[in-house]
Image (cartoon, rainbow, N blue to C red; front, side):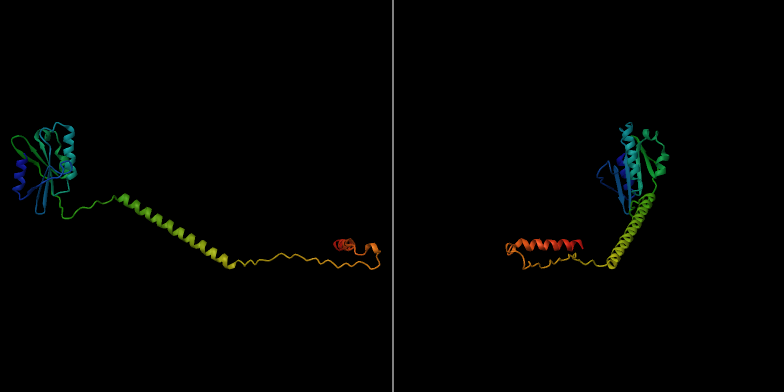
Length: 210
């Protein structure tokens, strides 16, 4: 079957190219000038394996649109249980084979590959992201205005508030009158320091009473 596919596409001017990993890449890859064709093959001994059958369909579906044409090759016994409309909707061509011959049961759709298709984000996610950016910008602008207003108020308070000068508290100084002992005191009072102290005490009490 591989030999038939090889002759089929090489006669169309394509060359077979090696594949790196059959789990990620097609089982057969044919390339030419501006054209490439990928083929996923389900082995004849594996078509009764449900998991292998589904894996080959998923691989072909994943490759569809990534090359000019994508084919899935199935044993005719497996193709009898497959709805070809599923492959037609996705543009996947279908080869059926047995031990006698190979048939192109469904032609593959041709996809233009002039430019590399870049993944586009979902519109809903992009709109939500843009809305979040706008909301953040609004919050930052409001925060900047608040900071500017507070800064202006602080500068205004600094300009209008009077300077506070340090004033030392007034402590009145009390001058005590000079007291002299009378000359006509008895001799035993002469030179006694307590006479002057007691005389001054009486005058201090009168001054406080005033």
